Image (tube, rainbow, N blue to C red; front, side, top):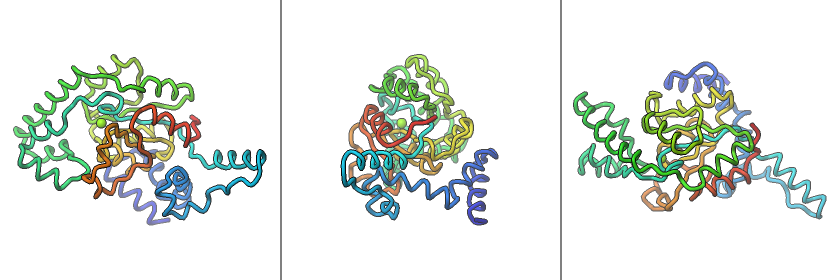
Length: 294
Ligand SMILES: [Mg+2]
């Protein structure tokens, strides 16, 4: 138990977390708490097949309707409680319009882009890379990024299914949050055009950005929920799934085009709990796999 809290304290110090967030985080390393999280394997055939939690799966019903009723209640009892959904913005709640590859090439140059990309199969963390640059070079890089983001704002379109998903979550009183590496101005324009608001909505100005788990843990703390009671939904394996997994949340990768099925991503360690190709599919998997209780 001592090492459990030592591990949580180390992470707490690294990410400069608040005391309540630290408490939540420390529970993530508590063996009893982790045992509860194993229930997610019921919804993940690939994971369950190789996991000891599989033995807890309810037995097949032997007679109908009583056995079926018992089976349903057993499945229901094992569903994880979900109290909030945290979304990425660009490419998740909005149609992807920013050409990130072109942005990275403009910032890094073709040669460095190709080299860094080959070393980072799950994606390039451009904000992290330019942090270590000299001030003038860094300023020029931020200008290039801001230019691409400005073009993205001008062409911003709401993702099909986003309004239906928000309507569904509101009907269940499930909280909606947002984390983006984009700037606050883009979030404000998104809120204006969409008409639905997300709170908290943390942008680059928050200071820590995905895949750092700090923004997600901050939202959990402000909602007074545990990280394993929320799901992070996003279209970036590196940023969104990385952030969610480091925080101890459920994760759902929105992969509209199936790009993450390519062998290019075969060597990454990041594995989302769920995959969906549309926000409509996200709605259905939330319904099917969780107890949506605020
Ligand atoms: Mg995105």
